[in-house]
Image 1 (cartoon, rainbow, N blue to C red):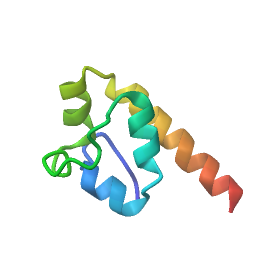
Image 2 (image 1 turned 90 degrees about the vertical axis):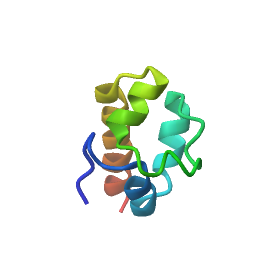
Image 3 (image 1 turned 60 degrees about the vertical axis):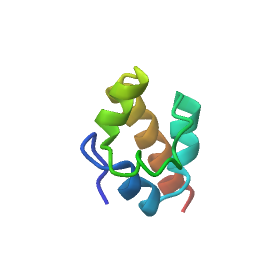
Image 4 (image 1 turned 180 degrees about the vertical axis):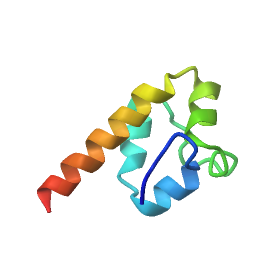
Length: 70
């Protein structure tokens, strides 16, 4: 799965629950909130005052590292 800023929070978490840790570390502590599941990464970042490109880079770094471990 390719994750972009348009990917919803629910889609990302369904793909890999480890992304929740990356999001919480970035300042999104409402990862499990039912209303956040339908938001895109970009929308969620906007609500939390975060830079979507930086959060996306952190997610990609996590996924790349996980891929290297396999």
